[in-house]
Image (cartoon, rainbow, N blue to C red):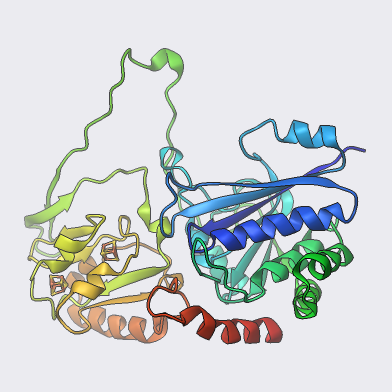
Length: 393
Ligand code: SF4
Ligand code: SF4
């Protein structure tokens, strides 16, 4: 009987592009070893693909040529048998095309199929971020540090073959472990990688996620206008400027909050977030002036609050702030909301500063999460730690 299977890889634009491409290529070549036909292809998550923007790669495998051609008669698979998320901060949702807004990472999964996440966290923690849905599915974790490198660079920490071994376990209809091993032996020529794939296969297990389980956040809903509802000519709605807003304690209006596109949630780009010590801020304005995404709200008392709905996590504010430790970039995966830090500070300064200290302790160091542009040789330094985790499982 004709069979069509699809795998979707969700990755961090630029930093994981080569990794995602290598995995989808490996899927097709492993499936070839069982006489199946396939194609792997990617598309930009943004145009052009930018640092950290979620992107997607696909592998489609069919039992025969005609089924493959029929399966390709669409822009991208609408339903997939496996989704792999290469960085667990992507579990908060992917902003893959700005015009249709934030999408849950499990939205394309067929009922009962498997979502695989590379993470050091456990399933209950990941489910705080992964949006709930009506159909059941399975969630499996490949224990590991998100592998970041660059558009033209590949960090060879075995993430690619570990994912292939895991897929062989999660979706045996696609290919068995023997086909993955044959692909690695013939194309990658590494017995060490065969061991990594086999170990990942043996260790992988998935938990059942019931309907309604997961992050209850309601994603923004909207209707695209039909052809009949469109006006003649082309018109683009102007962006309002924004304005002052209320102090949560005194209720007095002040400061300035730019109006922002309510559909385009830039935080899905972020692997680190800035945390601000408002008590030491000198109001020098440098963070506000240098932020490339106009993410700072000027608070009614003249400090600067990184608006976490808008911040893409680039780290420039940390670099330009002249006050030691006033802005620190910390690990995004430790957070499950985008609440205003300044509002928390205003409500209880002592509690905020205490929690800031705890946050910095818990979410630093962040070297494990950075995308490698901090110093030359960072990738090479990271590989042994990644391999150790792969070994221990
Ligand atoms: S990390 Fe700082 S500079 Fe970069 S987008 Fe966020 S607030 Fe702006
Ligand atoms: S750069 Fe630092 S000190 Fe200057 S306004 Fe921003 S947070 Fe305050």
